[in-house]
Length: 606
Image (cartoon, rainbow, N blue to C red; front, side, top):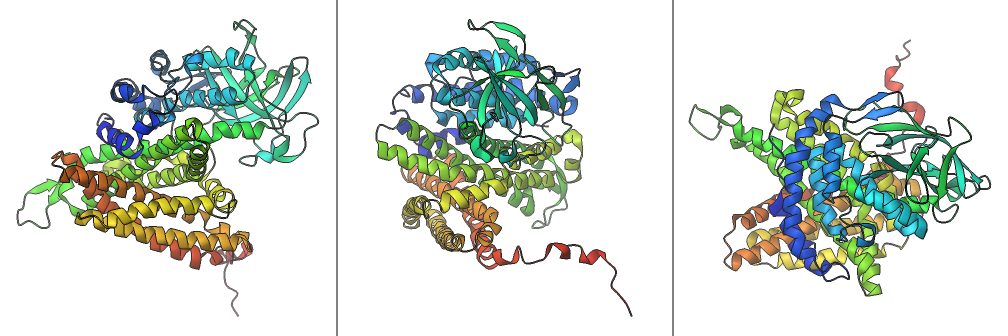
């Protein structure tokens, strides 16, 4: 299997030409961004290829082991984590006052992509550190920030998020874990499942962020609080003490990401409870946890297309080497490499075009996170915040759903060899499958998009974004470059379809919520397809201008060709989504529940 190579050229292009890294570098505190950009990309690419990628297949094969409450990660993980932490990658976006590098969220786009493409099982560990750091930084007390954040940044300690319980699943209103006050702390009891890196051997301590209920808490999601519950207790001077009453009861045996221990955690099994510390105000834990959740949802979207890009690289290398059958358009009887067959080329182009669209949309969303946090103008901050909130479920849901299809596509290019574990492509197919599930399933993302993001402001944010898209589409449609013109015209059709469907959903949501929600996932995918096409059109216009100015870099011509393929093959899905949503939503709930298995019963005969 080929070694992972980070797509540095495309990353540079997206950051500089589409995500406005120059504008981000003008925000307060980010002045050095463009100076270090290329070196960060190069160093991260080297680390991903040289350190993480060689461990990827080992991690899949060996997995994690669980003995007497202790988890041992795959061979090489502990050493790789130390190198990762020592290199400062965990603290990339963290303020310097806590030991971080203070760089923009935008740079998380390419670095997260590299970590996950090269070794998704490893990447999930340090990814959670960043979420825990952000939650404590924004919601914790000054003492909590000083006590917990520096060691999370350095990597000496790792972080987790503990939400899910056996009876609750994604319905956090049913969380039962309890927190009883005792002096300056709380005693936490309960069980959490599916906890990523809840126990491992890579760091000296694990800082669990746990959702639990106080004795007088109201029912439902309004009665949940957040607590810091360390694996090892820490004194006021920051020194480790005795073990807390936190145990790992086991790890899951999974379809993929075997290098990532997914743990069942029990709190208070040995005594009165595990010692925990309230973060922020009581009963606002779910609100705080969503700080981690939204960061994680963006990261999982990046995970999706990162693994898809790894699979694309593998299938491209195989297609260039595999010789099979003659070229149908040639009179030669000689067999050719399969990359010369049109259908294989179609599958490769499908992967390439979708991956580039997802990368661009994700990085642009990351840049908006920086503008939302740092822009001096409040109006600019609000506009970018609204854009981010609209795009997070799209980035998470569309990128991950799309990536499963792309990894399947890559495996198809391998043919029967792809179904064999030794070729490695099966691992990408298995690993990517979880991305549509954790941190909120695609259905949950779609409900968020329709119920909260579209309906809440009567479609104002969606309309504003579509107007931005339309302005760029009209500019592309007016281009003298024939390919760019065709891309712009296709995008205009896609935007018109999205606008019509959005209006239909908004009207139906006021009368029949079930009908509006019935095809919310296809609506989310439609948003992704059109927003991805928007970024591809923008990219094509930049490239056309470069070529018109005399730049002969073949990258630009390739980018236009890829965008043209996206316009004809991907944007064209808009008409199908429109019919599915508008004409088909009423069909979803029509069949009675007891009619689903009528075909399994014998007919009554006379």
